[in-house]
Image 1 (spheres, helix red, strand yellow):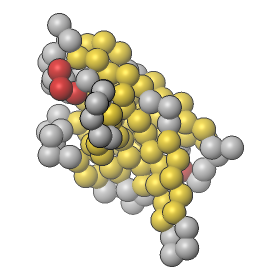
Image 2 (tube, helix red, strand yellow; image 1 turned 135 degrees about the vertical axis):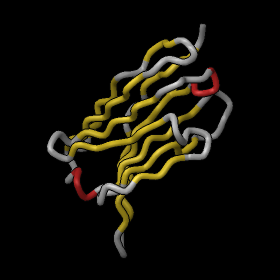
Image 3 (cartoon, rainbow, N blue to C red; image 1 turned 180 degrees about the vertical axis):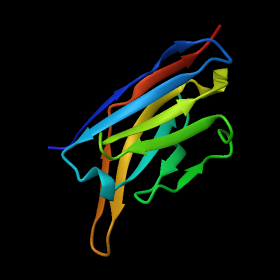
Image 4 (cartoon, helix red, strand yellow; image 1 turned 180 degrees about the horizontal axis):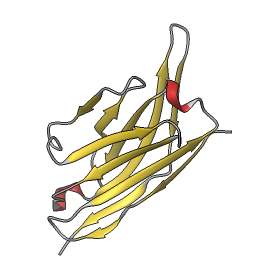
Length: 119
Protein backbone atom coordinates (compact mmCIF):
# COMPACT_ATOMS: atom_id res chain seq x y z
CA UNK A 1 0.00 0.00 0.00
CA UNK A 2 1.38 3.36 -1.08
CA UNK A 3 1.28 6.03 1.57
CA UNK A 4 2.60 9.55 1.89
CA UNK A 5 2.87 11.54 5.09
CA UNK A 6 3.18 15.25 4.47
CA UNK A 7 4.08 17.79 7.09
CA UNK A 8 5.49 21.25 7.62
CA UNK A 9 2.66 23.47 6.48
CA UNK A 10 1.17 26.23 8.55
CA UNK A 11 0.45 29.92 8.91
CA UNK A 12 3.40 32.20 8.26
CA UNK A 13 3.90 35.91 7.76
CA UNK A 14 5.04 37.31 4.41
CA UNK A 15 8.78 36.98 4.08
CA UNK A 16 8.89 33.92 6.29
CA UNK A 17 10.05 30.40 5.54
CA UNK A 18 8.72 26.88 5.76
CA UNK A 19 10.09 23.44 5.09
CA UNK A 20 7.64 20.87 3.80
CA UNK A 21 8.32 17.15 4.05
CA UNK A 22 6.75 14.18 2.35
CA UNK A 23 7.67 10.72 3.56
CA UNK A 24 6.72 7.89 1.23
CA UNK A 25 6.20 4.20 1.81
CA UNK A 26 5.07 1.36 -0.39
CA UNK A 27 7.10 2.41 -3.43
CA UNK A 28 10.72 2.05 -4.51
CA UNK A 29 11.25 5.70 -3.76
CA UNK A 30 14.59 6.10 -5.52
CA UNK A 31 13.09 5.12 -8.87
CA UNK A 32 10.44 7.84 -8.86
CA UNK A 33 10.57 11.44 -9.92
CA UNK A 34 9.18 13.46 -7.03
CA UNK A 35 7.12 16.57 -7.52
CA UNK A 36 5.53 19.26 -5.41
CA UNK A 37 2.31 20.74 -6.68
CA UNK A 38 0.13 23.41 -5.17
CA UNK A 39 -3.52 24.25 -5.52
CA UNK A 40 -5.05 27.51 -4.42
CA UNK A 41 -8.82 27.98 -4.08
CA UNK A 42 -10.41 28.51 -7.47
CA UNK A 43 -7.16 27.88 -9.33
CA UNK A 44 -5.73 24.99 -11.28
CA UNK A 45 -3.20 22.69 -9.72
CA UNK A 46 0.28 23.99 -10.44
CA UNK A 47 3.56 22.08 -10.62
CA UNK A 48 6.06 24.10 -8.63
CA UNK A 49 9.13 21.86 -8.29
CA UNK A 50 10.53 18.56 -9.49
CA UNK A 51 13.46 16.41 -8.46
CA UNK A 52 14.09 13.52 -10.77
CA UNK A 53 15.16 10.05 -9.73
CA UNK A 54 18.63 11.09 -10.83
CA UNK A 55 18.60 14.23 -8.72
CA UNK A 56 17.96 16.88 -11.37
CA UNK A 57 15.72 19.72 -10.27
CA UNK A 58 13.32 22.03 -12.05
CA UNK A 59 11.11 24.87 -10.87
CA UNK A 60 8.18 26.92 -12.00
CA UNK A 61 9.20 30.45 -12.94
CA UNK A 62 7.01 31.84 -10.17
CA UNK A 63 9.10 30.15 -7.45
CA UNK A 64 12.62 30.13 -8.86
CA UNK A 65 15.12 31.48 -6.39
CA UNK A 66 12.75 31.04 -3.44
CA UNK A 67 11.89 27.33 -3.44
CA UNK A 68 14.36 24.46 -3.15
CA UNK A 69 13.38 20.85 -3.65
CA UNK A 70 15.54 18.00 -2.38
CA UNK A 71 15.26 14.32 -1.68
CA UNK A 72 16.77 11.84 0.74
CA UNK A 73 16.47 8.38 -0.74
CA UNK A 74 17.70 6.76 2.48
CA UNK A 75 14.69 8.25 4.28
CA UNK A 76 12.23 7.95 1.36
CA UNK A 77 11.51 11.63 1.83
CA UNK A 78 11.22 14.67 -0.40
CA UNK A 79 11.49 18.20 0.94
CA UNK A 80 10.46 21.63 -0.22
CA UNK A 81 12.22 24.58 1.37
CA UNK A 82 10.16 27.71 0.83
CA UNK A 83 11.74 31.09 1.52
CA UNK A 84 10.55 34.67 1.20
CA UNK A 85 6.94 33.57 1.29
CA UNK A 86 4.35 35.73 -0.42
CA UNK A 87 0.57 35.83 0.06
CA UNK A 88 0.18 34.35 -3.42
CA UNK A 89 2.01 31.23 -2.22
CA UNK A 90 -1.04 30.39 -0.11
CA UNK A 91 -2.27 26.98 -1.25
CA UNK A 92 -2.50 23.32 -0.43
CA UNK A 93 0.85 21.76 -1.28
CA UNK A 94 0.80 18.17 -2.49
CA UNK A 95 3.63 15.77 -3.14
CA UNK A 96 3.51 13.45 -6.10
CA UNK A 97 5.55 10.43 -7.10
CA UNK A 98 5.75 9.81 -10.82
CA UNK A 99 7.32 7.06 -12.84
CA UNK A 100 6.74 6.31 -16.50
CA UNK A 101 7.87 3.25 -18.41
CA UNK A 102 7.16 2.19 -21.96
CA UNK A 103 4.02 0.41 -20.76
CA UNK A 104 2.85 2.02 -17.58
CA UNK A 105 2.59 5.35 -15.84
CA UNK A 106 2.56 5.37 -12.06
CA UNK A 107 1.30 8.42 -10.18
CA UNK A 108 0.79 8.62 -6.44
CA UNK A 109 -0.35 11.61 -4.39
CA UNK A 110 -0.06 12.81 -0.85
CA UNK A 111 -3.01 14.26 1.02
CA UNK A 112 -1.65 17.80 0.96
CA UNK A 113 -0.50 20.27 3.56
CA UNK A 114 -1.90 23.78 3.88
CA UNK A 115 0.39 26.77 3.58
CA UNK A 116 -1.15 30.12 4.47
CA UNK A 117 0.82 33.33 4.10
CA UNK A 118 -0.79 36.23 5.88
CA UNK A 119 0.06 39.07 8.22
